[in-house]
Amino acid sequence: MAGGRRQAPPREDVLAAAMAMIAEGGLEQLTMAALGREVGMSSGHLLYYFHSKDELLLRTLEWSESRLGAERRRLLARRGTVRERLDAYVDLYVPDGHRDPHWTLWLEVWNRSRGADEDARDRQAAIEGAWHRDLVALVAEGVSRGEFPRVDPDRFASRLRALLDGFSIHVAIGLRGTDRGQVLGHVREFLDDSLPAAGLADD
Image 1 (cartoon, rainbow, N blue to C red):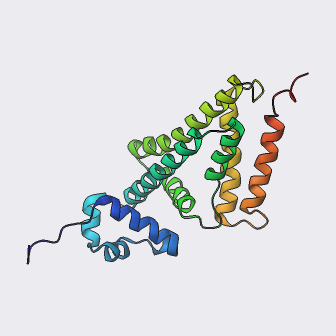
Image 2: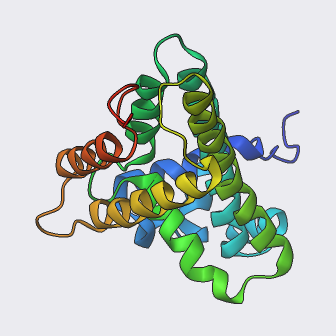
Image 3: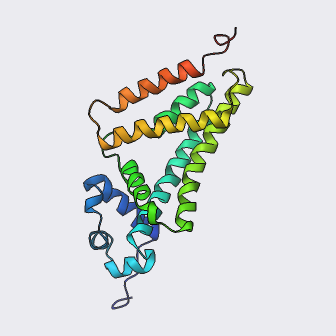
Protein backbone atom coordinates (compact mmCIF):
# COMPACT_ATOMS: atom_id res chain seq x y z
CA MET A 1 0.00 0.00 0.00
CA ALA A 2 1.39 3.41 -0.95
CA GLY A 3 2.71 5.24 2.07
CA GLY A 4 2.37 2.12 4.19
CA ARG A 5 5.00 0.55 6.37
CA ARG A 6 7.72 -1.27 4.43
CA GLN A 7 7.61 -5.00 4.98
CA ALA A 8 10.78 -6.58 6.36
CA PRO A 9 12.44 -9.17 4.10
CA PRO A 10 12.05 -12.84 5.06
CA ARG A 11 14.50 -13.88 7.73
CA GLU A 12 16.13 -16.39 5.38
CA ASP A 13 16.91 -13.56 2.97
CA VAL A 14 18.64 -11.66 5.78
CA LEU A 15 20.72 -14.73 6.69
CA ALA A 16 21.61 -15.33 3.05
CA ALA A 17 22.69 -11.69 2.74
CA ALA A 18 24.83 -12.00 5.88
CA MET A 19 26.55 -15.08 4.46
CA ALA A 20 27.12 -13.35 1.13
CA MET A 21 28.74 -10.40 2.91
CA ILE A 22 31.08 -12.74 4.78
CA ALA A 23 32.00 -14.46 1.51
CA GLU A 24 32.69 -11.15 -0.22
CA GLY A 25 34.45 -9.13 2.45
CA GLY A 26 34.99 -11.28 5.53
CA LEU A 27 33.50 -10.90 8.98
CA GLU A 28 34.93 -7.44 9.43
CA GLN A 29 32.47 -6.21 6.78
CA LEU A 30 29.46 -7.72 8.53
CA THR A 31 28.10 -5.04 10.84
CA MET A 32 24.46 -4.54 11.75
CA ALA A 33 24.48 -1.20 9.92
CA ALA A 34 26.03 -2.67 6.75
CA LEU A 35 23.68 -5.66 6.76
CA GLY A 36 20.74 -3.34 7.31
CA ARG A 37 21.70 -1.31 4.27
CA GLU A 38 22.05 -4.50 2.25
CA VAL A 39 18.55 -5.76 3.08
CA GLY A 40 16.79 -2.43 3.49
CA MET A 41 16.36 -2.52 7.27
CA SER A 42 17.65 -0.36 10.08
CA SER A 43 20.22 -1.80 12.48
CA GLY A 44 17.64 -1.32 15.23
CA HIS A 45 15.14 -3.42 13.28
CA LEU A 46 17.75 -6.16 12.86
CA LEU A 47 18.44 -6.09 16.60
CA TYR A 48 14.71 -6.45 17.22
CA TYR A 49 14.75 -9.72 15.27
CA PHE A 50 18.13 -11.09 16.38
CA HIS A 51 18.75 -9.33 19.73
CA SER A 52 22.53 -9.35 19.29
CA LYS A 53 25.25 -9.87 16.71
CA ASP A 54 26.14 -13.17 18.41
CA GLU A 55 22.61 -14.42 17.74
CA LEU A 56 22.76 -13.20 14.13
CA LEU A 57 26.01 -15.07 13.58
CA LEU A 58 24.71 -18.27 15.16
CA ARG A 59 21.50 -18.17 13.13
CA THR A 60 23.48 -17.56 9.97
CA LEU A 61 25.66 -20.55 10.81
CA GLU A 62 22.58 -22.70 11.43
CA TRP A 63 21.15 -21.57 8.07
CA SER A 64 24.42 -22.43 6.31
CA GLU A 65 24.55 -25.78 8.11
CA SER A 66 21.03 -26.63 7.00
CA ARG A 67 22.16 -26.25 3.39
CA LEU A 68 25.33 -28.28 3.99
CA GLY A 69 23.27 -30.90 5.81
CA ALA A 70 21.01 -31.34 2.81
CA GLU A 71 24.05 -31.73 0.56
CA ARG A 72 25.64 -34.19 3.00
CA ARG A 73 22.51 -36.34 3.10
CA ARG A 74 22.38 -36.35 -0.69
CA LEU A 75 26.00 -37.48 -0.94
CA LEU A 76 25.62 -40.18 1.68
CA ALA A 77 22.47 -41.58 0.07
CA ARG A 78 23.98 -42.03 -3.38
CA ARG A 79 25.12 -45.38 -4.75
CA GLY A 80 28.69 -46.54 -4.47
CA THR A 81 31.00 -48.07 -1.92
CA VAL A 82 31.04 -46.82 1.66
CA ARG A 83 34.61 -45.60 1.14
CA GLU A 84 33.49 -43.52 -1.84
CA ARG A 85 30.80 -41.91 0.29
CA LEU A 86 33.27 -41.40 3.13
CA ASP A 87 35.59 -39.59 0.72
CA ALA A 88 32.63 -37.42 -0.34
CA TYR A 89 31.92 -36.62 3.33
CA VAL A 90 35.55 -35.56 3.82
CA ASP A 91 35.49 -33.46 0.65
CA LEU A 92 32.39 -31.62 1.89
CA TYR A 93 33.86 -31.17 5.39
CA VAL A 94 37.18 -29.59 4.44
CA PRO A 95 37.07 -25.83 3.60
CA ASP A 96 37.30 -24.74 -0.02
CA GLY A 97 40.32 -22.62 0.90
CA HIS A 98 41.54 -19.63 2.84
CA ARG A 99 38.64 -17.56 4.19
CA ASP A 100 36.01 -20.12 3.25
CA PRO A 101 32.89 -18.23 4.42
CA HIS A 102 31.26 -21.14 6.26
CA TRP A 103 34.44 -21.97 8.17
CA THR A 104 35.16 -18.29 8.81
CA LEU A 105 31.73 -18.03 10.41
CA TRP A 106 32.13 -21.35 12.29
CA LEU A 107 35.41 -20.19 13.83
CA GLU A 108 33.91 -16.86 14.88
CA VAL A 109 30.86 -18.45 16.49
CA TRP A 110 33.00 -20.89 18.46
CA ASN A 111 35.37 -18.12 19.49
CA ARG A 112 32.41 -16.19 20.89
CA SER A 113 30.92 -19.26 22.59
CA ARG A 114 32.97 -18.86 25.76
CA GLY A 115 30.41 -16.37 27.01
CA ALA A 116 27.37 -17.94 25.34
CA ASP A 117 24.31 -19.08 27.28
CA GLU A 118 23.22 -22.71 27.50
CA ASP A 119 20.73 -22.42 24.65
CA ALA A 120 23.40 -21.15 22.27
CA ARG A 121 25.83 -23.85 23.35
CA ASP A 122 23.17 -26.52 22.87
CA ARG A 123 22.52 -25.23 19.35
CA GLN A 124 26.23 -25.32 18.55
CA ALA A 125 26.41 -28.86 19.90
CA ALA A 126 23.50 -29.83 17.65
CA ILE A 127 25.46 -28.66 14.62
CA GLU A 128 28.43 -30.81 15.59
CA GLY A 129 26.18 -33.72 16.52
CA ALA A 130 24.62 -33.93 13.07
CA TRP A 131 28.03 -34.30 11.38
CA HIS A 132 29.11 -36.83 13.99
CA ARG A 133 26.00 -39.02 13.75
CA ASP A 134 26.23 -39.21 9.97
CA LEU A 135 29.88 -40.19 10.16
CA VAL A 136 29.25 -42.84 12.83
CA ALA A 137 26.47 -44.34 10.69
CA LEU A 138 28.74 -44.36 7.64
CA VAL A 139 31.61 -46.09 9.43
CA ALA A 140 29.20 -48.58 11.02
CA GLU A 141 27.81 -49.40 7.57
CA GLY A 142 31.31 -50.00 6.24
CA VAL A 143 32.07 -52.36 9.14
CA SER A 144 28.78 -54.26 8.78
CA ARG A 145 29.33 -54.72 5.04
CA GLY A 146 32.86 -55.95 5.55
CA GLU A 147 34.36 -53.02 3.63
CA PHE A 148 36.12 -51.75 6.75
CA PRO A 149 37.93 -53.64 9.48
CA ARG A 150 36.23 -54.02 12.87
CA VAL A 151 36.51 -50.62 14.55
CA ASP A 152 34.32 -48.84 17.09
CA PRO A 153 32.38 -46.44 14.82
CA ASP A 154 31.86 -43.78 17.48
CA ARG A 155 35.49 -43.74 18.62
CA PHE A 156 36.76 -43.74 15.05
CA ALA A 157 34.39 -40.93 14.06
CA SER A 158 35.55 -38.83 17.03
CA ARG A 159 39.19 -39.23 16.05
CA LEU A 160 38.59 -38.62 12.36
CA ARG A 161 36.60 -35.46 13.04
CA ALA A 162 39.33 -34.17 15.35
CA LEU A 163 41.80 -34.70 12.49
CA LEU A 164 39.47 -33.01 10.03
CA ASP A 165 38.86 -30.05 12.35
CA GLY A 166 42.56 -29.49 12.91
CA PHE A 167 43.44 -29.62 9.24
CA SER A 168 40.37 -27.58 8.28
CA ILE A 169 41.32 -24.75 10.63
CA HIS A 170 44.75 -24.66 9.01
CA VAL A 171 43.14 -24.34 5.58
CA ALA A 172 40.56 -21.76 6.70
CA ILE A 173 43.12 -19.43 8.28
CA GLY A 174 45.54 -19.85 5.38
CA LEU A 175 48.38 -21.45 7.33
CA ARG A 176 51.38 -21.50 5.03
CA GLY A 177 52.27 -24.91 3.69
CA THR A 178 48.76 -26.29 4.23
CA ASP A 179 46.29 -26.14 1.39
CA ARG A 180 43.12 -28.06 0.63
CA GLY A 181 44.79 -30.51 -1.75
CA GLN A 182 47.48 -31.40 0.78
CA VAL A 183 44.90 -31.87 3.51
CA LEU A 184 42.75 -34.17 1.40
CA GLY A 185 45.87 -36.19 0.59
CA HIS A 186 46.76 -36.54 4.28
CA VAL A 187 43.23 -37.62 5.16
CA ARG A 188 43.09 -40.16 2.32
CA GLU A 189 46.38 -41.63 3.53
CA PHE A 190 45.04 -41.81 7.10
CA LEU A 191 41.89 -43.59 5.91
CA ASP A 192 43.89 -46.00 3.75
CA ASP A 193 45.99 -46.92 6.80
CA SER A 194 43.12 -47.04 9.29
CA LEU A 195 40.40 -48.60 7.11
CA PRO A 196 42.20 -50.87 4.65
CA ALA A 197 40.07 -52.53 2.03
CA ALA A 198 38.43 -55.84 2.96
CA GLY A 199 40.94 -58.67 2.98
CA LEU A 200 43.98 -56.44 3.39
CA ALA A 201 43.43 -56.17 7.12
CA ASP A 202 43.07 -59.92 7.64
CA ASP A 203 45.89 -61.73 9.41
